[in-house]
Length: 145
Image (cartoon, rainbow, N blue to C red; front, side):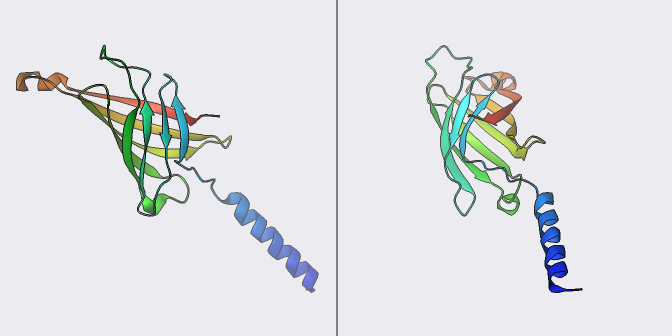
């Protein structure tokens, strides 16, 4: 085989490897869910830690909804493509806390999606009311364009 043929074979092999590589989903940025809640995730540091802001569009409280801080962590071993993550929101307008856990995906169209499950813990006055203090749900976030 001549050098040109070898170079062509190597180029085709490299192209097929890069085409097969899975697209990377990045947590950093502005996200919105189907209910209109939105969040901004700041940069993820080398330890996988991040912070940001969450603005919910829904609430059971009658108080004014305010932007609330979030703190989280991304699983560092899987930061290459579709990482798992978790974060906590300490609501600025109520005595509640929500924890989210999820994974960042890239769909068939190249669109980034965050699929999350959450637990919301509301403060109750008495131990006998503990049974109704925790709610569970799920959210799907897309990158806000």
